[in-house]
Length: 155
Image (cartoon, rainbow, N blue to C red):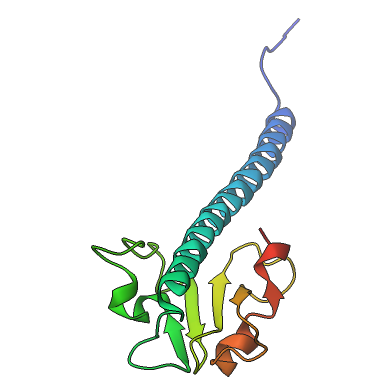
């Protein structure tokens, strides 16, 4: 009688398929956790930034200008230098300030819009908004249209 010990090719294929499915599920969960972690970091940066903007407003009676004048906006790094750096309440901008954060200030510098690009879109646009002031116009129609939902719905 001839007996062989070992696995058949069919058994090996079944095991490989099961291992592949399990690893795909695990990698998907890890990737989702990374996205939530980065968005959690953006939430903390947004809260810190808003506190600094409110402190600036309390001390100066207006929000900081964007670039050279009011009624403008763009990447966060364009905020007037008096807002951040040595001797200010906000030492440095977030690491992703030129790709994930947009800032707008109205002409009277009493109203701002902060748009934050999140990775977990929840079915909307990539950007959510945080506003301060009376609104409804914040100085940057393009950014206002870009960030349609509030960050409270995402964070």
